[in-house]
Image 1 (cartoon, helix red, strand yellow):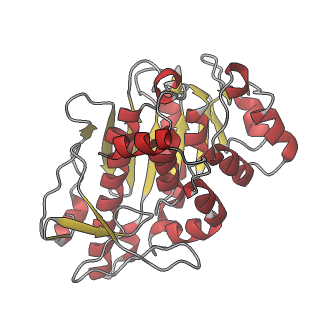
Image 2 (cartoon, rainbow, N blue to C red):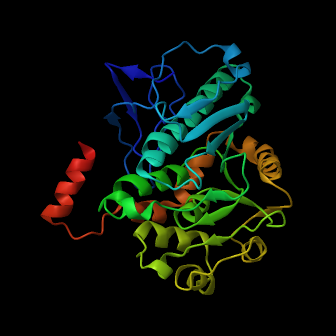
Image 3 (cartoon, rainbow, N blue to C red):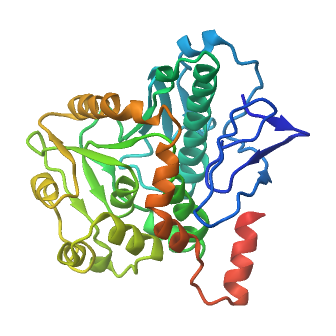
Length: 333
């Protein structure tokens, strides 16, 4: 499934499976004005790939659910139909975006989704049936509840890691902002802080209207003394153009009702009902736009669209010192 050479994988710097193989269609990704470069790295322990020959029958075979990480699952990836993947977050009560959920769950899950979509696209191109290369991804909170999409970071632990944003959280945002197929956040409950940013990194946001139970969107860092990283500010500026709304979100820490968020353009759709209804609407959106991934340019256009955001998020604005340098080295080793 992965193109493996000498025990290594060669991939682009912005997308895990924009890969180079002997007989592929060479989907390559680069930032505008940047040279395309390859890097090599080892696979996550959370998922072990197997190599297999692609065949036309692969298009009709949906993959089985994959729960990550294997030892203590925090999310599940499903592939209910050829053009749709769903990542369900079920980490604890409220899906705090911890080191483990991001590094051992979300990042390898995104790798799985992209790999499977690209495999389908390669087969579709070989069969000259481009319409069979549709694709879209939905990210949803735990399906058997209607209270939380994500309640943000595990602040007590993340604040102890001086490299949390640069080496854990920001790479997840970059991955989503450059993802090659449409992404939909199915917000089935409260969506706070880091969870809010996760949803903004997606292309579309659909949320329960709060009629069944209260649901809020809020960037509440100003209320408990947490400064924003550059990734938050640059994504907010790119996604939310009105400076008054930026002020309301970032400096006032306003708690938006779903209706307010829709009116202000933060949300794209509201749904009356519970998680199943939110998912049904998200799937409708996925069906509507999944065909736009067929020609392989959705991700390339997103790279151009979010060029400045990606450039800014990747910069490390911290003043270097021995403490942060040592902490960065420890997190990589």
